[in-house]
Amino acid sequence: MQKPRIRWHIAVFLAPAVLIYTSVMIFPLFNTLRLALFQEVDQARVYVGLENFRTLFFDPIWSKQFWNALGNNFWFFLIHMLVQNPIGVVLAALLSHPRLRFAALYRSAIFIPTILSFVIVGFAWKLILSPIWGIAPSMLDAVGLKALFAPWLGKEEYALTTLALISVWQFVGIPMMLIYAALLSIPEEILEAGEIDGVTGAAAFWKIKLPLILPSIGIISILTFVGNFNAFDLIYASQGALAGPDFSTDILGTFMYRTFFGFQLQLGDPHMGSAIAGAMFAIILLGVCLYLFGIQTRMRRYQL
Amino acid sequence: MNSARANPINTFAMHGALILYTLIALFPVFVILINSFKTRKMIFREPLALPDAESFSMVGYQTVMKQGDFFLYFQNSFLVTVGSLTLILLFGAMAAFALSEYRFRGNMLMGLYLALGIMIPIRIGTVAILEMMVSTGLVNTLWALILVYTAQGLPLAVFILSEFMRQVSDDLKNAGRIDGLSEYTIFFKLVLPLVRPAMATVAVFNMIPIWNDLWFPLILAPAEETKTLTLGSQVFIGQFVTDWNAVLSALSLAILPVLVLYTIFSRQLIRGITSGAVK
Image (cartoon, rainbow over all chains, first blue to last red; front, side, top):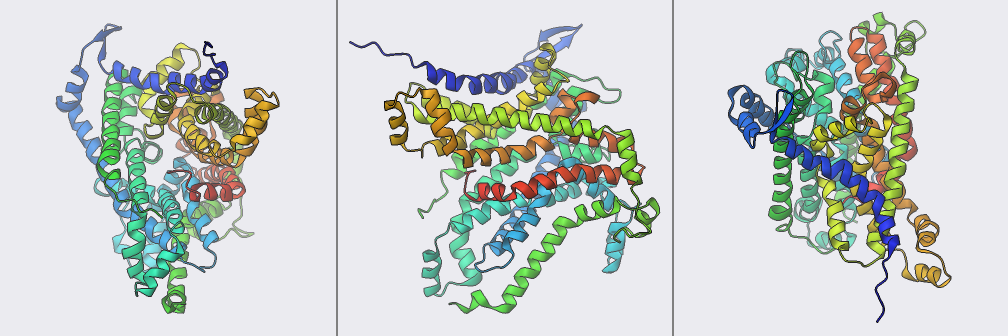
């Protein structure tokens, strides 16, 4: 009988990727979850079980910040779902119209904000909305709406919504592109069959195209969810680590950064930071599972 | 043909809506760029006017060049991005080839394990990553960033590339085997050239997030000599926040390389997205 040969080349092909992925991503991920179970007492690491999570959820000082950040994060996500994705769908529907001229030009131009860094986007909008520079108030004045102007980024009640809208402005290109791709893949015969039955224009969009692109909208929603729940850069770049005014723009990413890295007088606490990371991990995992098992499997996929 | 599709009023409305949104998308970039070339007085007096002979000024750029080491930042960003992309493509393609070409025990499981990272953001593990980089002495080196971005990019790269490698014809590879080529030669000489378009797609997908990232440079490599362009401009703008000329010029300098890259690669990027590579 022939002895099975060990095929070393398979191991050689797999090794570098698996090694880097495991040691820099998977191992730290679990190590972070493990660190959340410890505390530093007299410069020694002490195992405390779920104590950090109890502090995070129930200790008044911590829990107030945590629930604030979590609530803000949900609002941030909601704005994206309600504004970014519908605008993306509308733009894609317009772009995918047959015989539309300059479609490639519009597409490339509308995608430009998506490639800019949060630092650029954050500061650019901060300058434009600034009452000192006055671009926003004078433009509103030109259309007779000057009374609507307020220093949006500086007011507690508007700041978070303003930042969410800035983020929508930046990322609307992604749903636009994905939906555009989905719309292009709808075969012409189906639309023509609809036309023969008298389904055209807006009715064709609602009755034929929208059901066919629902899976893409599902993917975009989960991508938005994951992206929003580990967002950090835009808030940090425009409002700083304190997520002002008065923590009104604090989300989980900025809360975790402040906690584990420290800021101004507060010392960094890697163990509480890990506990927050653990909570973020649980939320993202929950969202992804909900999508995979709750939505994706039930969605009807049409064979095209 | 159906009349609704060619209705001139509809066409007009569609162009109107698209032009309006294009203006919204480009307006902030445009305002930053034109004002970076104006004198401080004119920035405030007429923010929407183009720079002319009277209002033209490069004083912001001079401050930026004198005070910030933007060439160094640019070089760091460049090294990190190119280094990470090289590793992602090489190691990702190798793993994708192993998974798509050979049948072995645990193949399926290995594929799933590598796919885990597509949905879970690497930032969650930051505390332990920082600890590891400190203990290995990699903190404040560009290698720390390259390793993190490679680990972050590999899952999607393996996923996309193995989809494409399944389409490479078996006859070609078997012909190579009969001619006595080693598995390594088959991979590097036969398969890699054939999946080049997919490699380009993966590269373009990874390039922008790596170039723009603020989180890991801030935490793993905040030292002056390892600052990336994104972190460098963030810190610079924070220090010069009242010097509007300098801030606008720094922003323009940060926008420029990305715009150049985008003009070069936008067709590749858009083709990559629309070909359904991210499903």
